[in-house]
Length: 265
Image (cartoon, rainbow, N blue to C red; front, top):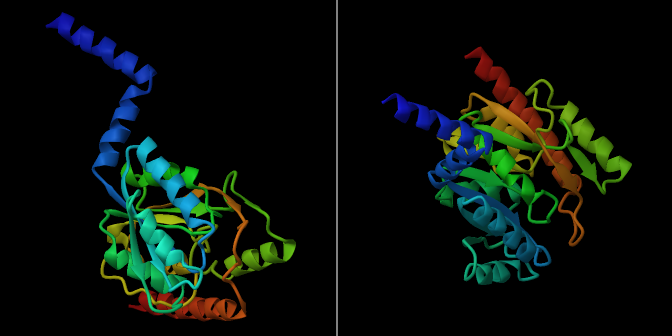
């Protein structure tokens, strides 16, 4: 019996040194979770093929059981049709909407159709690094977080390609949320959540910054920010405009009232 115990200890020691135990656990955990990544699109035909291929490479490399859900707002450039064609080769589903209804409502509709246990959200313009997907999933899969955010403002996080004016606007918008959250990058459009985080949570469908609303209203115990390098889009045009800035101010005001009355109850 002692020889058997000794042999087992030796095997465990060698596995630990080679990180094999961690790899085996990661593989086991990943197969037990379905990941749904929701990607709103509007005139993104130049980007979605490359994005889909990169995400699928991550799924295969990390043995992730996942799906990609494109929510297309009837893009005039044919993005929806291209997304449909990608479903023949990749784990892609497409939700076609009749007109441009906005990013937040697209994400909400994607949530309602997702089959996963974990939901992810990212932009279609290749600004969010797909290589960071495993780093953002691991804390959730291992039970160390319910909600992870790809952050430009923690650790080695960075922004590449933005003019100074855009950086100032982003920092200013973040400062306006300080009474709502300690999260350094609540404006991020790249995040993952356990499905339960939004169970029975009413999310509005106005504007672009739905992550902030989930931070304020969501059902979670632990949130973790993961450093990412955000790269401004190379193809296509930004969807941000003056009306979206107004929507953002409107949302911050509404969330402030929500938070105030919740604390009073």
